[in-house]
Structures are given as structure tokens and as C-alpha cells.
Length: 366
Ligand SMILES: [Zn+2]
Image (cartoon, helix red, strand yellow):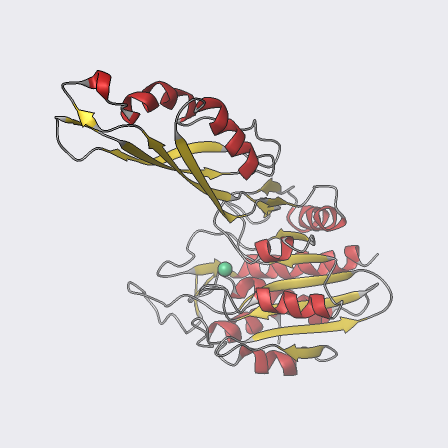
């Protein structure tokens, strides 16, 4: 099988989350020379397969074989790999069976490596993602088998293949402020403490405020107010309480205590409570790490362009890898039809991606 035949084979497996569409059984036969460990949790299927060539670094390729349901609006069967004008149409063509086909084929081709090569796959990335990559990493940690570097082959390119790799993600912190005043009659403002009036002078300083200046990887972390409410929808009662909600997509330079400090400074003297809940931690893999250098060089060699380092976009399983302090990056085909009807990717891109991963294995093992 070549990489395109493998790609088509994966696309024609019905693997809607959390079903693996029997892909893992197939891969166990396909990746000969690799030791397979199956780590299943209820209906979620996971696989970790590795091959130790010798002493040296452990490079892992990671991803998911599950796809979101096809939905309406398809011009061809979403579970038949349909070729048209250089493109292959099917659910998962971009997200992310192209990536899986490219690295599986590159791993199969690898004859030499200074260290260990492995693959980590789950059938639960598009779902709750509770028993997928998280569980495999836990398993590997317990056995001292965590990789040194991980490449997640999610679609990352923007307009042309090779133009972007993802080296991290912003975090997200949700905040709720409750300001307590004293309710009263609107005709006697001197007897009430109106939290709307109190927040009015503070608001220009916090709404949309930047908490840091950003850096080469991240835009500045900014306070985005999402809700403010007070009062009881009457004109003659001055409210006793105000509730304000906000979100910060944060870089690695801003954390919960930085936001607490910022609010303490601006809300000084007011009777308030502040609740902050981080829902995702920011992470970044430095440009000078071996994996970023080796991948960038491989892309430049195959595509003739230098990829930009991005931290934009929604979450992926890379966040779970980063939490172990492992160098993790993402690189895959152009992302412009993921989760949409008529998802497709070009044959050329999949071939290029396969070549990039092949070169990466050669470079990283040097
Ligand atoms: Zn994906």
C-alpha cells in the first residue's frame, strides 16, 4: 500500500466517535515491527505502538482516528473516498486521517532511527476526550515510557501546504465578579450604594484591557467582558448587587494571580468577590527545541517555504501532552473544510505530508 491507498482505506472505515472503525486491528497488522499496546476504556479505543531501534530520543506521532458525524449537504458518500480533480472527498479527509495516513506510512517506511519511534492513537478526540490520549499518557507515565517529543498531525496549514505549524495554544480563564452595594429607592441615592455607579468609572480601565504585551507566539491576553447585570428591571430601585462575567484567552505570561492582582488594583475600596476558573492552560514549545527545528527544516526542504509558528485556533489533544512537559507541535494539511460537508484534501498534500514526516524521522534520529 502507498500512502494514498492507506489514506483511502482509513477514510472508508466508519469511525464516528468513539468507534475506531476497526482501524486499530488493521494497523496492528500493517505496522509490522511495532509492539502494540491496546488501552481501552469502555467504548473508547486507544493504541500505543512503538519500535525501539536503539539508544536515543523517543519520537512519537499522535492523533485520532475518530471523526465527527457526516451531517447534511454532501455531494458524495462521506464514507467513500471520492477522487475529483486532485482532491479526495470524505469525512475525516482533513481532520485527521490525512495526518494519520502520512505518519503511519512514514513509520512503516523507517528503516533506521537513533532511538524509539512510536504512534499514539485514540478514537475519542472529537468526543469528551476523557478516556483517550489522557489515559494513554497516564499509562506511559506510570511505566516510564513517555516520549521526548510528540508531533500531532492535526490540520494546521492556512492557505498553502507547509505555511504553518502550531507550537502551542492560548489558555482560557473564566471570571465572575460580584459587587455588593446597598439597595434603595432611586429617589434617595444618598441612602443607597449603587454598584452600577461604582463600576461605571472602573469599567473603562478593565473592559478590553491588555494584561500583558504578548510575545512572538501569543497575542496579548485581553479581558473580554461577556455579561453585566444588576437591578430588578425597574426604574425606581437602585440595585444592591452587580454581577459581571468575563473571559481571558491568556498567554503563558498571564495567569490567575496576575488577573487577581489587576482586579485588586482597579476595584480597590469596593466590596467585591472575584472567582476565576482556568478552563485551559496555555502552552508553547520553544522554537529552539529539537523537534521544532527538525520539523521546520523538513517542511522547508519538502515545500520550499518556512512555516510560521502559530498558537491560534481551538484545542486539540496536544494540550494533554504539553501538561507532561513534553515538547509537542502540530503539523498537518490545510484546514478549510474540517467538520463541514464535502470535507476534502488534495492528494498532493497527503503525499507531501508523508515526505515531510519521513524527512523528520531522518533528521530527528541524527
Ligand atoms: Zn482533529
